Image (cartoon, rainbow, N blue to C red):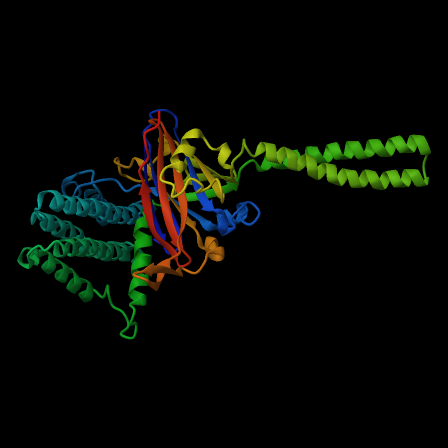
Length: 490
């Protein structure tokens, strides 16, 4: 099963997020995705101006484990949960000689607890917001009690860590985890508080949330977590520190990528064969004219020059012909996904190409034609169609072996596509136009937008699924993304 979402990452970047579940009991789990970008011809994006190398410069791919789903009760009480696992390793560190494995497990457990808590709070916050929208009921006060319990259990470990023989750098890890969890709880409580206030919930009912937030702010200040320079008007240092902290803690979920060109050996073999064929032809010409005209004659000299010219062109032409035919069998890049212990847990292959509209599948054509503004939307003025294919293979036996979390079951593929190159040929974001109203000419200003349509074709063990989005852009960047509902096609 593939869980897929599309959102704006920044002014010019589109983020495609796909979650691939490790569901197969076989040797491997297979997924395929094809993303089509339908780009207006006026933007001058085509196979001459936008080659393979530019596309891959504009694409950034992150691969990580998907944080496991736990409830707050699970985190507090479950013996195999992240909090209990951390308490166990701290006891080992306190009682036994510090080993490299224990040190790595200690650091990993802190990071894992932080990453799981972040995911849990995201799910819980969305659930509370949905519950209020449907049932008009605010949070249960037990929610805050559970958060306080998690922090109390965690902070109770500080004295044991200080008395242990851990290296000073590793001792700091528990403080990093503390600051990260405090920031995370603060973020989601403020998000919840803001929602309730916008929903006109009485202030008195929100008093406990406000008190919790203030207590954690005071705690962070006391521990010098949020200290910044008074001259740092835009909190640059604070935001940078939080960003680095987030990368450090959530880095436990990120996987290593070994990127290599697909079919490189085949390509070199083809060029070698092409060179051999060209040499055979040019040498044959030379032998023939030597037999007819003999050595050291002008015709033989001319034949040698012509043979050399033909050899060079034949080698290039045959090589390019073979490579163009082989491109349908090979992907551009092969990415080996490796865990921190260098085990290969999966492989992703990716391929980029421009394709004509008539080469698209019938269902893709129908989905693209839905909700056109005019029938000539692409037939008259034309669109350039980018096809970005991915083949994903997950190996269950190696999956999540380095992380002691039996709920870990999926990989997240985050692909960011930057559209900054697309704006070069765009008009000014504001356009003036005139209308006649009550006999008077009125000049008005409107947004000049461009629509980039995105269709995704997702293959999994459950079948094929299509999704479509419309990216609305101006020269200043992406304004919004609209989801286009698709008809069921048999």
